Amino acid sequence: MSCFLVVELAQFFSPDNPQLFKVVHKVFGRSTVSKLLRKIDSTQRKKAVDSLVYEVEARLRNHVNDFMDFVHNLEHRLKEVQQKIDNLKSEQTKYLSPE
Image 1 (cartoon, helix red, strand yellow):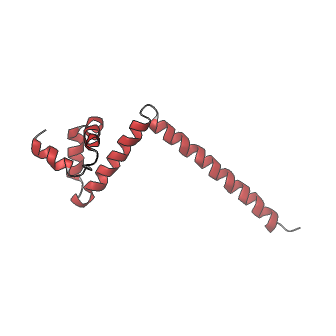
Image 2 (tube, helix red, strand yellow):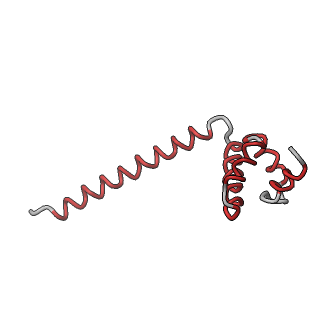
Image 3 (cartoon, helix red, strand yellow):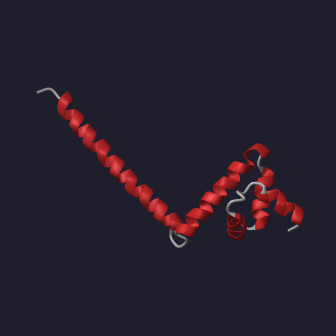
């Protein structure tokens, strides 16, 4: 990768944590990140990089099961919400049904 391209991509990363720049490129590949950013409107590139950084940070926190843990947590939350909905419907029926 040319120095120019590195500088061009580096502008989207926080200078407070230069390691993230390296990790994002290691995880996704420099070519992939570069192609992705070129395809995105220039006004949206910072948001795209922020998303990549978020994903890398999630992988670093739990690199083995990050996605499966995320899915499991969402499924668990969905079941909890569905149970609350069922309870509310049952409660509502008590008040709406004629006695």
